[in-house]
Length: 432
Ligand code: UDP
Image (cartoon, rainbow, N blue to C red; front, top):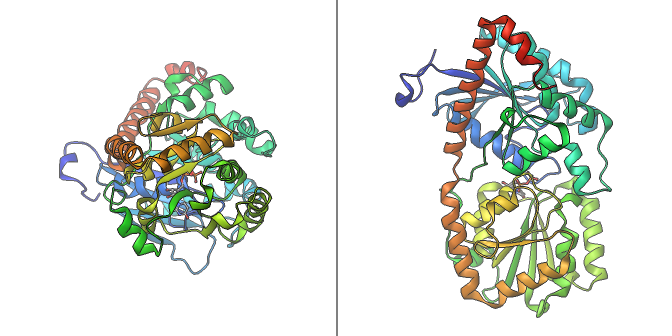
């Protein structure tokens, strides 16, 4: 077994199989299905080894030219598993492939002669594959759903979620050793929606790379991006989908005073976002602000810092965010965020101190708060400085260390259950 992390010498090394079936942590960000979850898996996996956990991440192969095993940084590996057609497939086509994916992971494990102590799944499709592996390996299984179908439905009535997904999530939350969520709010949702006991839910806030996302000179950033010094710049970053509520922001722009001085930059979206971009452009045209908005498409994660620094404010008008990495990245760069009062945003943004929280689906209060920030540079800077300070508490290293603790806990629980089969029978009925 390889040696990692001198500080961990006294603790036994664990090995985790991390499942990210439908999307790779190395995929370009900002596409329809590539955002916070990809960042999470990449950032956490590449820090787990230093925290004393060997980490193999498994994703479904979509390109025959990719090597089977790729380095993920920090000693973690990404393994491409063939399950179904080797091509990008819509998420709707993936549920029947979860068993083949689990078989592929098992074949790799056997070939490598490895044993995994714990399974950590991301999104319900991975958790469905992970359930089969957990049984096969008699290993504990923790999962993060990132979003739950039921929560999305409640946040935005028009959104469609497949019965497959809703049923699988309802089942999975009760067979997992832990559901990992980013906020206490989500823990309460799991209790209310599915009666998941709170001690089966681990709350682990996400992180931000504060070495990459840190405050910098606004005007240097604008010069680097070819933007004018005197523009009032509002920025929105994320996957382009209705859940992100960009139409609210566009309508808010139309309500702003001096709107002819305001520029709204929207970052994110790939070819498959074209339909939604067309819809948003039509909304902008209908409220007379088409010429104030620029859709920049996806920007690589490591180039985003310049955009955050250049902005006067970042807006996040989402209908729901389980955590909202964009908000913490912007705040780490010293930029106040004006966001919907939903999900994880309510725990990362301190209303009136590091940004503003707005009741959702309301353009007018967004316009009002953006006007306040753009019209008062000292206030913008004060909130931005508070925001940057408040983000010092978030780090991916801390997330990795907390996950190690959780893995140890579930492994110990599993061992004690194996040692006492009668107690195991009693305990397994606890979450029904
Ligand atoms: N992102 C990026 N480039 C883009 C759009 C998004 O790097 O063009 C990143 C963004 O910086 C953030 C993640 O994708 O780290 C989006 O995460 P968030 O939690 O805000 O939203 P989610 O995708 O989970 O809905």
